[in-house]
Length: 416
Ligand SMILES: [Zn+2]
Image (cartoon, rainbow, N blue to C red; front, side, top):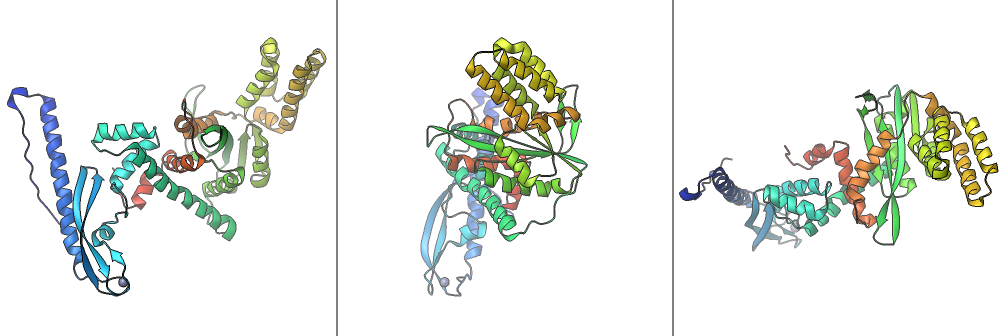
């Protein structure tokens, strides 16, 4: 169907500039766009009404016209459409809304929804609202964007949960991804300020990758990374992360390297789901632990211990720590050293493996935690309700895993 609308713009000849012309052209285009969209809706409406019957087979009768306002990519439009009621079952339908897939109470088109959510995954809702207005002239309040996140993100999260039920309760795992020679599996957690209680809740992040390309002497680029994160407990994290690992092909791969900071939930995750993997303790966490435990007065010794750790010489580390302990009379210091040794001992295998492998390190997981969580959920002064943060995280993951466009295409949206 083709359709024509015309528009008129007025430009003052006294104030000619590229800006005044550009502004006039844009205003005209938007005005024409709104009229075009409204006219197209009117044409579609005429068509879908003809000869309609209710799903139950009953005859539909008019209940008058109802006006609806909608924020679209060309600005706010107003249109009216027929409401019909079934003479047999009493059900009401608005044929136009049904035909074009408009959600019953939505105030924005799916095009606006996608753009608003794209911004909301990057910045605070207030900023997303202002940005949308500034760049595209689309007015959607921060409150509405927040609501859109809950709705759309809630669906994304629910989809993940359904997949988890299908796999773990009904055993429908599907075929796993193609195996690789070596894959890295890294997990970590970070605290987010909890708005409901004065404290924090943990977000857990896992990344899987197999190809690493050296960009420069100290920098590597991860080629095929998959990120998963959740604000739910370790149980849900494990089950969902394993699904990601299965799809990635981790369980068909020759060698799996499991990197963590040595937290007990990470050990358990590895034992439960990645038992054949090679454990590597994240070196950055170990070095920080050594520095913090020894304090500034033993800075040199800390440096020596970190060096020994990098060579996997845990036996020598133990001797140094024993000497350090016996030379101190401070009971709190001695306790700290004992605790540090406990950490090193329980991660001995991970320290030795880290030294043995030519590649180890926290770079990828640190970066994933930063990108996935910190940049959006841990900015200065931010605090969150879990139930509001989780849907946003679901949307953010679509973007991080480069599935955003695919997701919206599935929703019938033509994106550019
Ligand atoms: Zn009916």
